[in-house]
Structures are given as structure tokens and as C-alpha cells.
Image (cartoon, rainbow over all chains, first blue to last red):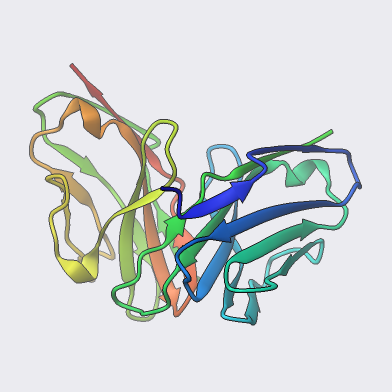
Length: 114
Length: 108
């Protein structure tokens, strides 16, 4: 059973056209993460939520925003996608008990920017 | 600055041969290190973490703070071990840094 679900799996958008990627989890975990992974590169943490507390990485562009309306859902908004934002976007959920935690990843959304 | 380095993009071994996937990290604090695995057409999943000192699917990894390494080892590789392996560092409470991954190909 999928515990972290990402929709859509593939998203095509136009240069400059806002796009939203969604993630949901059935684990009821406190922490949710968004990563960006470009081809042949490491997953790069964009931001995370601990409950409702939003934590942005210092080098995450302002173009990327996130919302977490409730425990189960988290959204990634790209306000004005550029060609360089084409990537796989990974969502993960984690319980929040350090030392025993496991990050559960979704299957990812592959974003194409035309 | 925090960094995780996996020097090999691709590692090919024959079935039954030992395998070692290298991981080096840079972090001034007390690290938590993980290995994640991604099998073909599957999602990224945790393989093992250094805190647990466990062996999963025959894989082990020892944290060497002196050499700042966390290499993944298995004495006898199996074809089903073929996958992408990522080393990851938890630097602060919820900040993760991943290496760029090593593709392990186990040949029959």
C-alpha cells in the first residue's frame, strides 16, 4: 500500500506558468520534505515542515513555495518555472522521532518545462 | 559545509563477488548516516542507518569518524542487489544531504 503518494507522476508546464505538485501521506507523520533531483545528481532538500512549522533551506530559490494545509497533504508551488527547474521532485514523510525515524519517499513527480 | 561524496557513479561486479560502495562525508558535528536504495521502477527507500548497526539484506556499513566515511559492504553480491544506492547525512534535526548515488550492477 502506497504510504506517500505524489500527483501527478508526470507534469508538463510552460516556461513561466505556475505549477503545483501535490503530496499526501497515510502515515500521519509529523515531518514532510520536498526534494529536487536533477538528472544524475543528488536529491537536494528544498524545505521541510515539522507539523505546521515551515523550514526553508537557505539556497532554495524564492520561486519555490510550499503549503501544508493539514498533516496529510503538502504542496509544492513553483511560481514561475524556468527551464532549469525541470527535475524530479520527491516528497517524503517522517515520524519526527530522531534516532528511529525513517523517511518514506513518494514515487516522485517528473516536471518538464517547455 | 556539509557534503556527501560518492566517488563511483557505476560499480559493476559479478554475482558472488564482494562489493563496497564508497561514501565520504564532510560535517563538523556528530553525523547520522544512512544508505538509501532505489530499485528499478521503485521509490527510494531506507536500506540501513549507522545508529542501528544492523545488517540488511547482507549489507553492512560502519561509520569511520577518523576517515569520515560510511562505506556500504556486502561479502557476496546477488543479482537482485542491482540498484541505485545513495548515501545520506542528517546534519541537523531535519536537514538531509544526499550523495549523487552509485549504480550497482551485479552481473550473472
